[in-house]
Amino acid sequence: MHGLIPDKLPRHLAIIMDGNGRWAQERMLTRIIGHQKGVETVRVIVEECSRLGIGYLTLFAFSAENWLRPKTEVKALMALLKKYIASEAARMDANNIRFNVIGNRDELPPDVNKAVQGAIDRTSGNTGMILTLALSYGARQEIMTAAARIASDIASGVLKADEVNETAFSSYLFTGGLPDPDFLIRTSGEMRISNFLLWQLAYTELYFSAVNWPEFTPQELYRALSDYQARERRFGRTSDQINTRS
Image (cartoon, rainbow, N blue to C red; front, side):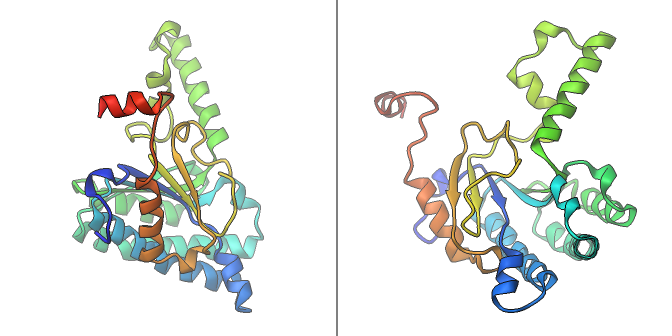
C-alpha cells in the first residue's frame, strides 16, 4: 500500500486528466501522440486504483467544450477513444471493473457509441471498481438537463414540487446512483475544475499536480493519496466535533 492507510482511501476518486498536448509540445511531438501516451497512463492508473481497492474512479476524458478543438484533433481523439474502449473491455472484465459513461452520448459518433455500449454490456455484471468516463460532458449542461427533467416530471405529475430536495435532484444528474467524489486530482498545474462535476464537488478535497498526465505515474498517485489522507474532512463541523464522533 506504499504507506497508505486502506481505511482512509477515498471511496470515489475523480481525475481531470490534463496536459497531454503540452507534454507532446515540450518534446516537439504532435498533440495526438500526447493523447496516445495519455491513454497508456489511463490504463496504468485504472488498474492501480482497482488494485488499491478504490470503489469508484471517474475520469474527465472529453468535455462538451472539447468539440470546439480543431476538427482533425477531434476526429483523432474519437478514433483513439473507440480503440481504447474496444481494446480495454476485456481487460476491465478480467479485473472485475464495471464500465460506465456520463455525458451527452448522443453527440458521440455512432461507432464510438457502439464501442461504449459494448463495454458497458460486457462489464455490467462485474462487482469491483466502477470506472466512469465523462464523455461530451459539461456540468452546467448536466444541471440544466436535470432541471428540465424535473420540471417535466412535475408538470406530468410524476414528481411533486415539495419532493425536490438535494437527494432527489442528485438522482436526476448523469451521476445518479454514484456517490459524490471524495477526492479530485487535476494534473498539469492548472488550478480550476473546468465545468466538471460542479454539483458533486461541493465537499470534495482538491489536489493539483504540476505533472502532465502522460507522466502521472503510480508514484504520483500515491503522493496525492497520501496528501488526501493527511487532511481532516469536517463538512462544516469543528475539529473537536470530528474527534468526538471518531
